[in-house]
Length: 408
Ligand code: ADP
Ligand code: MG
Image 1: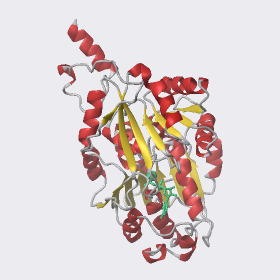
Image 2 (image 1 turned 120 degrees about the vertical axis):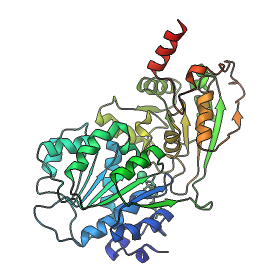
Image 3 (image 1 turned 90 degrees about the horizontal axis):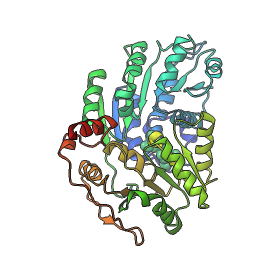
Image 4 (image 1 turned 90 degrees about the vertical axis):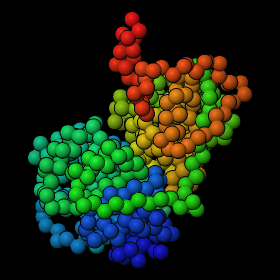
């Protein structure tokens, strides 16, 4: 099925000449979005969800009368700055042949607000933003959202969870009641689903199962190793597995720096990526990694959602993710757009029980590997009854303090 059969006009279709055909999620979503209804779409990481909403929304915008100053037609919210930049690029890429000039502005924190205020002078057609900076711009009177025709929440479950709840509520209050709502994500935990149902009514649900032939092959592996041996094992794998590039996930900013530093000392080019870096350093790290300027990006979960790094052969969970949902998004940085990839998780004595929970959520049961020379010696601790109530997440500092207090 070609793009043209989905109801997209020629200038849009001609911008997509590099693609043979729409992906399944694009084929399923584009006609529905064009009709104007609210949709909630779940489809695998790397399956092409961005264009599934970008294309029909540009098409709809083309059908509107452009007034000056321009009124924001489409508002796309995303959880990270890097994702805002990535989606902005996609919108511009699709717009090269349009008969009208489309004005696309991205708005995110970590950089000076002034250029964004300047960019918004005269209005904008599409705004792609992280919620916090969007609200700052509204507070500065730099943009108005009372004519928004379509709202997109990309990585919707993340935007609906607690971390963004207040900001999202404020944004929603600024939007007109009558508008189109589009929610996209690879994951939609039930709790978030309920919340979504409360906020958005009568949403059409589109669930795209990946057909086996199109399914990006992400080979998942679980390697048992002692906590202290993880960096040497990582070095060993980088040397022996032939990965041109690898994205390594760790739990803390400090660990990201520490592991990257250790790798560099052993002659492996590595850079840390986390929220404490300046925005300039974040751009640079990501751009250089995409450009294969170095081999290993050691990142916190800041890099877990949405980032599209083409031809990334491997992801390593040096520390396990907190939740089964994060596991999906982390490993989904590889195996994108039908490519294959490998996702390796390091399983230590302490994290063993947590990994079992992640496996259970995903109906998975991975064989445990041991690598010669790195066989674990640490003993798996007996399950502690006090941790029984905490499912799918690690003990927090508070939990640990509580336990220590209980022991005393
Ligand atoms: P998702 O949001 O589902 O994780 P993206 O929208 O980031 O996925 O797209 C993943 C990759 O697939 C991108 O590199 C994108 O350019 C590519 N892609 C998108 N649509 C198509 C298509 N129709 N055919 C081939 N590749 C595509
Ligand atoms: Mg995406």
